[in-house]
Image (cartoon, rainbow, N blue to C red; front, side, top):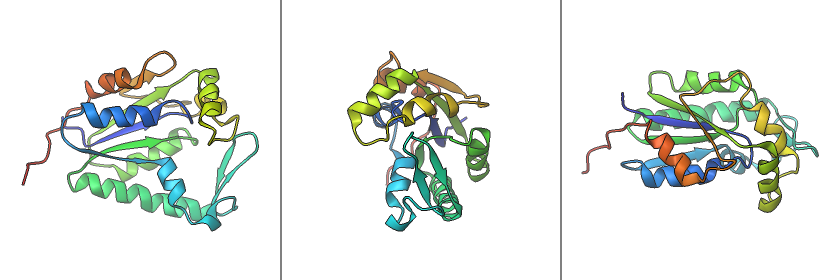
Length: 184
């Protein structure tokens, strides 16, 4: 079966972004990537630190409101539409809601061939990366390392604790098949 969409789920600082960049290099044909960080960055400023938007707590927790959810639904459907139009898509996600988060994507991607990938990383290693990044609230990585995988199963799992992004991408790419769109 041809893979239309690859969904990577992992906590903050687990190494998803590095894997995504490597996947774009090792997979045949062009693959577009969309991530939760890009979605959050695209939100209007008034929805950051807002009850109706997204709020990050001092301990790294995340809560979202109604306007966030509505825009997220539009974002998800838009990504699915691009895949249906023939684009290879890689999604970089953080399933804070566990199975409910995945179900949201499953509904949007219905009818498409999806490769579900779990990106694991030891919480202490992710916390060290979080500190080195300097752009995350401390505590987010350690908390998310565990909770984003609760109740979920995957087609393939990788662990970035001791495995580099390129090797993880090769493991994932071995499970993904795609016929590149014809050149015009």
